[in-house]
Length: 296
Image (cartoon, rainbow, N blue to C red; front, side, top):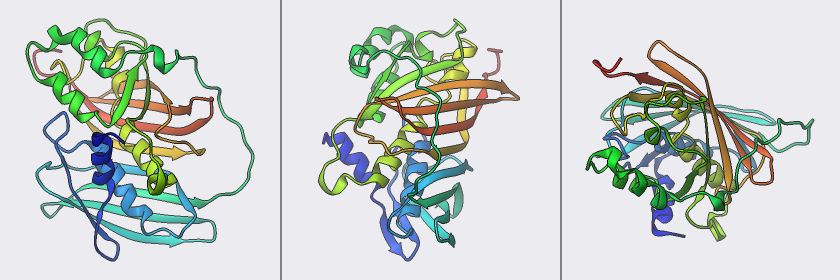
């Protein structure tokens, strides 16, 4: 694995404080607060560690309550709501400085056969034909007017190889487009040996799922987002459904659309497909999307 992926895996390896209480480190993201995908992934890790063997997450529903402090650890308390014959339910509260910053409910299921259907995977170019972040970001250096945004983006996403199918919002500000964005992603290295755990693949996809989901909202209005300073935003809630097995270290297509925005909020809906066309994950998120005063 790359050093960056090793660091991310370590970040998700929570310390057990006592039964059903875990502690995780936090680190600064691109903006000066804890990245929402980190909190969601760590909370899911905490829940997974209290679940009977053989049961994997099939859904999570969560709310971001307060900005996280990247300079302080986060304590995760797990509530064992129910252990049924087929399903398990857990609730997790993430706390910093004595206050809850995040709340997650997750359901787990023992594998079973059932009816199968899915919507087909949308068309997208092969990921190998698309530029890496290291190739793409220098093209838009003039947009950032000498700021360190490109460097912060590279550092925050170094553990993930994420490739935009079309230009990202910051590269097309001022030009409204169809409210749809696609990215291919995979971890920057293979998960082998003891790390080849289905729950880790799921938690890593949870981490990545918060990176680009609201891009489609920005595209609809020709806004570049926080990166160019024409939008102020933050995640409000986040829901995921895990349909089929997948590997986070193999290419996944994240197809994202925005059906609506209103009231200072925008809704993003995403579907994650394996390269061979299986619908693996569905994602929905609402976030604050505000235009700074003087720019509306």
